[in-house]
Length: 251
Image 1 (cartoon, rainbow, N blue to C red):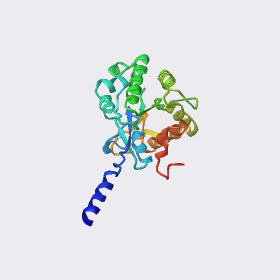
Image 2 (cartoon, rainbow, N blue to C red):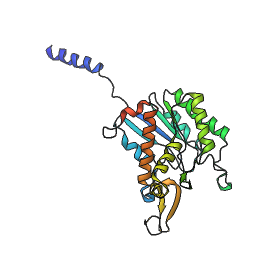
Image 3 (cartoon, helix red, strand yellow):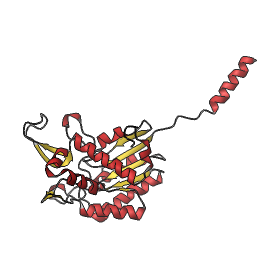
């Protein structure tokens, strides 16, 4: 009888054991400045790559960003729907588009998205994120490197303004990465800013024997500096996610 009683007691306690807490997922959706790259393409690095190392074990970063994608093609290629279907209450979606939406050149016509459609697409991401009990965060497109007379120039005027309008209309946290990155470039100066980007002399790196002169995409150092700006933006916007940084980064 004693053994039966103990067994019943154990079973009763097990019935009240809470299920293990599922991890919070943070989905990153965007373009080549955010996406993952294969090791053989190093040192090119999307800022989403170092971003995932800032958070503790309660957070999973799921980087769905893809090079060459605009808001329109991210939807039309079926890249958004799997994210929307997978979202759980408490998750986050950090969205940064604009580089490809604004590309009007003939060779990029398949990705170009006029500003009104860009705003509509961002609103779609926001509403479908919220419908699942998840939190959307808007990020303006990170600035390209362009200096004139020693001054870092704005490179996404219309699309950054559009993100502000959408954020205000839908009351969404906004990280102005366009402005923050330009301020970083200005602080560093034109020559030192090149250290953030894929600026390689011929023969400098075995993966790029002919060199590289890229004012849009970052190397490992640049990607980490940009990821740190995104973290600063999360702090400024009081997004709860910032409370899940590993201790060494939670300053």
